Length: 460
Image (cartoon, rainbow, N blue to C red; front, side, top):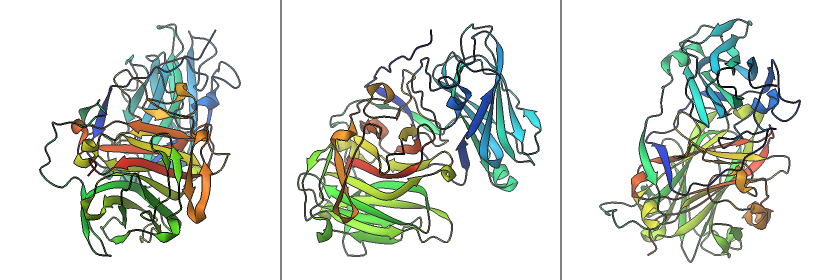
């Protein structure tokens, strides 16, 4: 009898933390449709469970992944993608019984099947991602076929998701060959306390000179990667315990504006698991902005610092975000860990709060190649439903008990199906990045708020 195992929690996390920015210009997408030679049932463990982003987080038998009818046959899983691309990579997420993939093929728009070189997966690490680089091609691809032979192991090889990576043009694909492994260094993200090993030898964070006058050098940056132009977004920052934050919004060239002490948001409050209740304050700041870049997509940076380099905790709320079928792998956010963040002893907590009930968000930590990261026990650093401890890495809480205030003073409650990740920081990760991917569970779509709880440095 197949069953679902609960995820254990590992509180001392060893990650591969990227030292480079996220790749840009790629089209990354999860399968939109799938069929298989056999499936365990028409619902649980069906071929359709292999569509969409990964949602089987542990090395465990999971009904949210594809499994064949029996555990000893040669089988195939055929996946289709919404957009044809000139491919550079295929990433196969396996959550159980890994080691039975004997070959992987791609399907061109014209229906030709091309078997990829070195496409037998002999690795037994579970859960794990089997990544295959693809040599430059002159045809676009919109399908992947995974062949498994489970006779040798006598166990189901369950596949949770398959990502197709590529570019819109052949030239872009040739200029951006995939890497076989992330550009990264190992880092221990263990303790949550201040570390006396850090020596303060310079600015605590990002330096920003504001258009309204003044400079701060303890800025904490959240970069929204490839934000869509033509839409308005709202960013609000609320300080905790009397902290007076300044919010800067900058484009890719470093141009932008700062805002401080906005009376229109002085009555905004919030209540989140990591912050507790935060009362209104005349020190709150808000800015409404748009990506006015000439290109359709461009990076936008939200940077929070303190007036006169005051340090403290804050909650940053970004409105206007939408996850849709056109977003491929999902929306990406990146924050570089500063010296001040490590000295503060405050974990970096990220929340995805759905605005529409139909959307079930999924939040994961990724490397520069968009691979979902794992801890030293092989668990994905990801969260589906924060109200279910078996579906989230680390400490998570039912967000239905909390809320944030959004534009025009409206309170948005959280929900049990919203997602959160709270990651401790110490001196070993200073200079590295936490890269987040927002996608969805069960192929759902909708509007959401992205919320970060962080600190600029040790309390003054």
